[in-house]
Length: 425
Image (cartoon, rainbow, N blue to C red; front, side):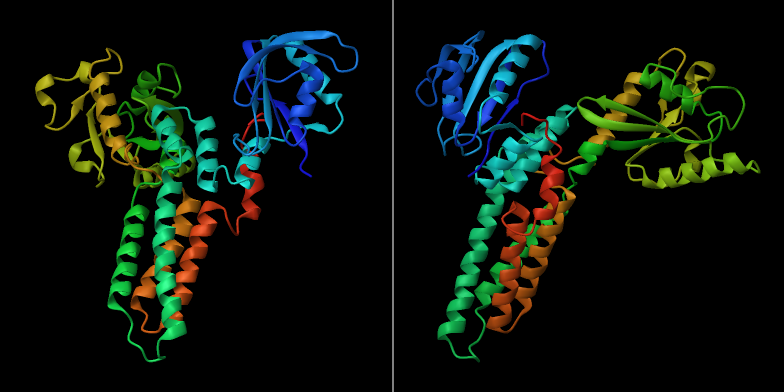
């Protein structure tokens, strides 16, 4: 029989309210021992909480009851909404700890039970993990789309189509002659679904939302790169001097611009140098410039490296004649703040080009891997001229979807995933 688990599911006290969740076959019985009675299912009621051994009053709390399977974990659940003082929470947890058959939940165990009991699939669990860790508006929206079943519903549609393809292939194997021609409609449908999966694979990955858009500030020495970094960050993150080559290594500043996660990166000035340490910094700067999602160039326009998302800055605008500003450049002064709002808007607009569209579900690397397997199998099925081989490729596609949703072949990664959750989740 499954253990009955409990944990504080709200934030660490003190707080106005703290929620203690109990889930498992003995959840109702255990709650009765400290509350005396329970409300009707999916209802709330106020009860006195007392220690089951001494009868000591612990708190007056709101109790919610949910019966299996119509609960978040698919098991019987009771939630105790207590006052959020440390002493109150500690006393209630100690009372639960004294009851036989209960144990404290492991991190992510409530969500893992929801997954194991079919309340959510693996893609929704990944979305919940991302939602808990979300720090920007874009991260929140992408995670919520997964957690709400956006990908799960789409996969269910794909699975239904592949199952129909498989049924057609199996019928042909059982009832048609060995040399029966392949139905061209099936091949066209397999090719169309493969192409649809290919479109999903071409979308920007969710990792850029989680890791942040890499915005690299590059240019020659003494171009004002570090000063701009400090001005944007609002603090002295990079060393600024008149000596060329001051920056020897890259400095990374995490930011959020309009809800977009940014990794603003200062780099060493690009030039030929005999200084061994500086040369290493220049080499790293060149590599980061190539890997940049957005490149902020602070040098002569003609010297800018080719890049799809280039923001050209005319730095030290307070020291230059406004008439000398090249077309397409943003005049910026780290001293006066001139041009900083325009620069930030340009960076945000360029960064949004590499983010997943907010109205579309974004997938992660694991999901893309299994989606790619299904796409390859469907493409192979569309090219096959043998019913048995078509049926086998379609079986591969179904297995790939099962691994995508967590129905098969994912045991090795479940501990790592649910370990990302907090104790009461």
